[in-house]
Image 1 (cartoon, rainbow, N blue to C red):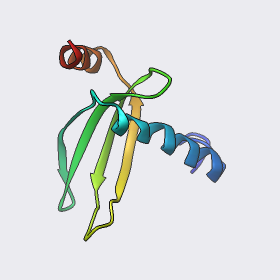
Image 2 (cartoon, one colour):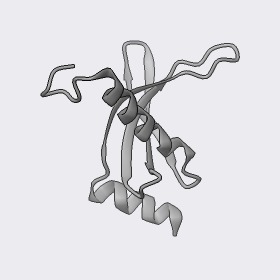
Image 3 (cartoon, rainbow, N blue to C red):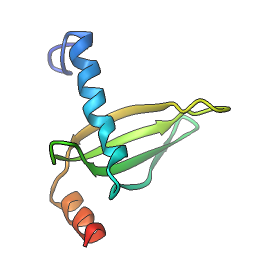
Length: 91
């Protein structure tokens, strides 16, 4: 990963992945289909991290026989449209 793409150190990249993965633990997260790419269905989830930051995470479920594998494609801070969707869900 180059400096324009993100952290240069693997430990920093792993930390960011752990933070982004926390949206799946949000009891109010919203998961929907995204794009169908290269024979696989990408999905997206909108949810809060433990630090109360709303994120949109795009991922592919690569789970197989008893092993859960989630490949995170990208993540970004939620924008106004995601905030509105999340607020509607939470009520």
